[in-house]
Image (cartoon, rainbow, N blue to C red):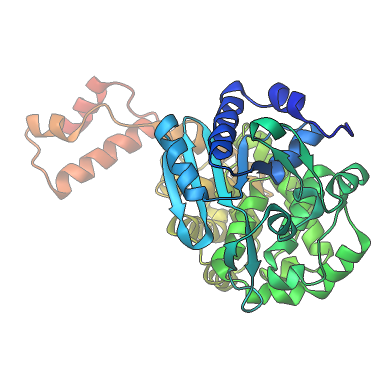
Length: 413
């Protein structure tokens, strides 16, 4: 890693030209207003590590919302402002930029959202979670690319250490416990010894965090390239039971997550699927407790409940000579993530084969004749039409009919 105090070359080499031009424009506007502007946090860290990161955080020692509005008018970006936190977000094309006023934070109680007020860059950097996220790069013309490192971030980056800035860090915001594990596993770093001791001490502080915020941290974990590493580490440190005592980060989960990336979703499994696998071995009652504790959204709640119901009925799918219409009826109507979780979790080769048949072929089967066709043939809308359409679907699934003409003959029987 370069020790130079000017990262202008890295900025231009590692970031897309559109983002570089945006930051130059932002820096020029800020300078004309007499303010400093910096790239901060993970974007700086990843530049130094040579990693890709285009979700950038900017800090201005001035009015961030006013600056963001000017930039939105230039770029055509969609702007979202948060006056309480002195921040704004810009989204356009594929870019996502946060702009914040340099600020200080105070916490009225552990786990509470912070109260913020405008401050200086030094104070703003000190309020952050870990030293490796406290570095800043100047964006105004006369300080373009200049590195500010006030708290030893570059040194810890070189040593591969995750270090908090003060002893009350996890008490102020216990979500940093999950964040520490994410960075540790993603970057291949280690928790600095004192930080590890304080993390273990403050695990009970996770109880001060709302279910919504814990869910958000878990979703970030499940969005990692190898989320099973974070979950396994969380179990080892006794953090995972804080989510639910029945959750495990063992070899079974490791294998299931790895299989999800190759068997079902070759590109990237969804958070929904990973969550269903995490909860797969819970009882129905335990699943409901997890849903309530994490305040899961409707889609995730449905997936977990359906996965649990499917697991309870897996014996029916273990019949080696089950008719295809039977397989279809057992699985149709369930969410894809719930079906996929059961496919990955089952020990039965027959069951896996039946589910795979449904996922790859049966769920796409439809009769050629529609309700409109049946009306033209003299079948009125109602239960009778529904019964005929179901019969045609089963005929298609079981190979009893394979053409529109055959379907018409079946209707006439």
